[in-house]
Image 1 (tube, rainbow over the protein chains, first blue to last red):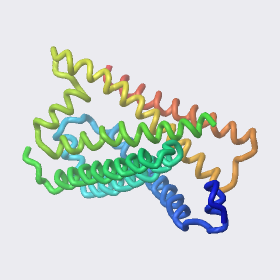
Image 2: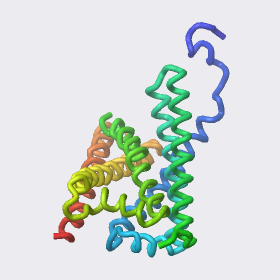
Image 3: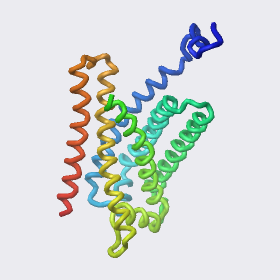
Image 4: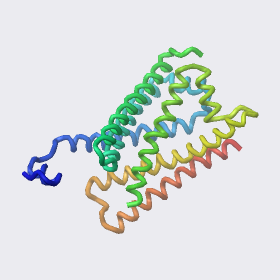
Length: 129
Length: 122
């Protein structure tokens, strides 16, 4: 095992055993998004207006609220995996790469949690009119 | 090549512009009438006489049309990736037709959707 080039140091060690799961989850969430985001885009298109009362009526249905929660989880997971690959391919220096990956995780978990909490709060009728 | 790079650019645009707009919309709705009014007037429909909102409305419409195309480009390109994942579609001619088809389909669907929206309003 060499100590020079990167390929020399890892040659013969085998895979890290994490790549295939990442790849599979990327495809799994892609398939989920194909169904869920298509449903979401069509639903938005069919809503008669985007005022608060209309949106609340729409979100009051358990089918809509649950589908939107599942979609939000799926979308932000897909974002986390996809942008991670993007960062790893284009940000080569260790410091900026780790900082970008941390920021990505904070963004996806934070925005996803905010969106899901908001959907549930509306669906459970917890927002004053 | 072009479609592969477009897939990444569109994915990132959806991840951030789409993700933030989606979250802002839901958080505003769940916060209260004032927060939703701010979102609604800035993004969906300006109040008469409000110049700032009129400008942000136009910008929001451009972003919305852009994100519609971005979504369908990423979606059709993603479907193409599923086909390529099976090992099919690597012959040069088929591969090229598939790549062009993603762009043709995404532009066609986006044009159809926004034509319906603008025709319904006028």
